[in-house]
Image (tube, rainbow, N blue to C red; front, side, top):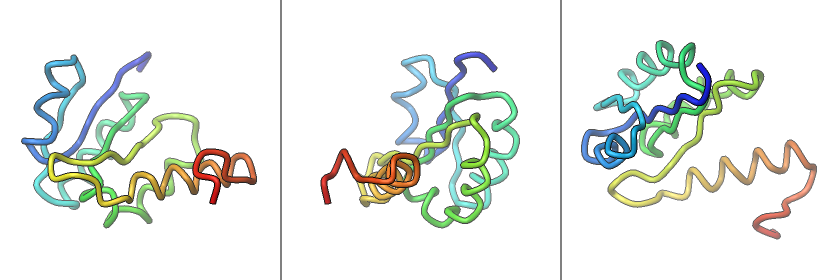
Length: 105
């Protein structure tokens, strides 16, 4: 599992990551993304998940907060950002540090 990175998202959004050597997994909906995530979580340290798939899976994704790996990060898709990834990052920082040092809100 050392240093392995994956991304789960729609085909257009993940194509560029493949060129960078990231393992790509296409998922057309949140059910498929959840299925893929269950499989790849055992093998990858960092897993990117597009925001459109991450938001409906937010409750499921909380289980990954309890372990050091894999780190599951929500990122914008090719359609642009919904702000969900930023919300998750802010929440994680506040849990870890007790304050918001990045966004200053």
